[in-house]
Length: 138
Image (cartoon, rainbow, N blue to C red):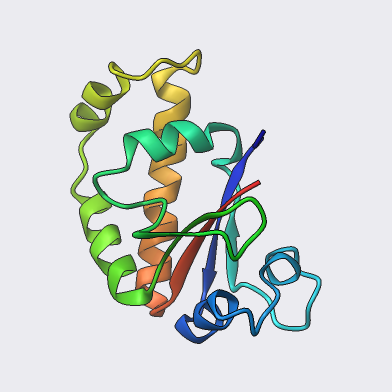
């Protein structure tokens, strides 16, 4: 059973290397190597499942799925990150509230919405840096 999920910013080359098994994804994401992700967004750890449901349309948890990292997750190369960042930027509170109404969760809308706001900022930074994203379910 998974207990969380985090988002990582990394270069397209690093992502390709993880997917090709040239770079140990678990060690890389765990900061156990000299080479490390450029940023980690862990504020969504507690609401990772809700994020996968609420932001599926925008592909915020990855455009592709992989098991190259422990317990799997999603990833997006930099061109898709830019598309996702733009889509998230246009997501309104009303859109989120409507999606939230269809979720079965004990978490409040305000709690989830504050995480979404921070995730939008994370995606904006990653897109501006030209990086890829891994969403690691753990």
